[in-house]
Length: 99
Image 1 (cartoon, one colour):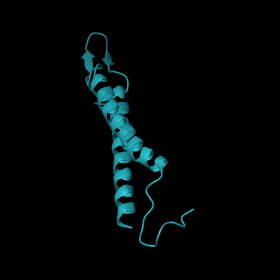
Image 2: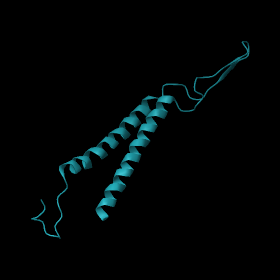
Image 3: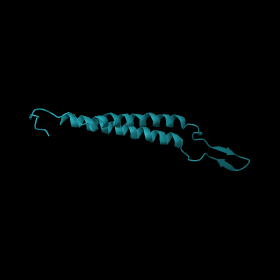
Image 4: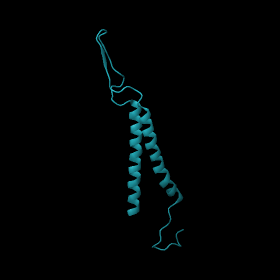
């Protein structure tokens, strides 16, 4: 094992590394796209409104009290996690190449 390699030669990457080099960024990119789709489709709720009905003395407010719906928040979270994965992977890959 390795007796045929001289000091200047480098071994080719193992098949698992090649697969990992393709699968990890692909999964991260799929997460970004899926998160953006979920965020885009999560806009069905009313955004930040309230109404006052003077005759009934009640104030109507939507649940959550946020300007962004929960579906949009979850979608954006998934997209951000995918972007963080892509960033980590690219930094890790560039760091290994320069070593």
